[in-house]
Image (tube, rainbow, N blue to C red):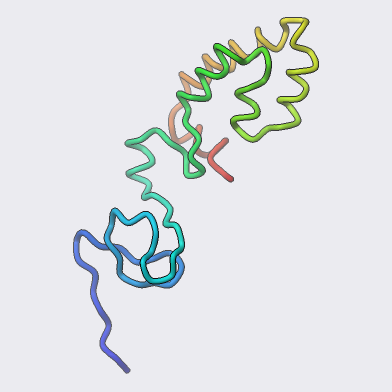
Length: 118
């Protein structure tokens, strides 16, 4: 068998083809597949693996939550439509305010578990 290449400290393995690439590479130069960020990068950037931000969701809930914009942002289209239908009652705005507070108080790990899937 051939020699196995070992990766350096600033390198990682491609999640698709297994080639050794730079640790900061977003796309593998060998196969062209986009690489998922490391868990450390997710925690530092406060961004879920699917690119959703807890802070952005909270801001959408506070300022546009009565129209369900935060629900559309998080991929909950059905609930977003319900918020739009009932926006004239101001009930969705009240609920969105509470959800905004919850987004701000929940940990990044909890947000990633609940809303981090694509």
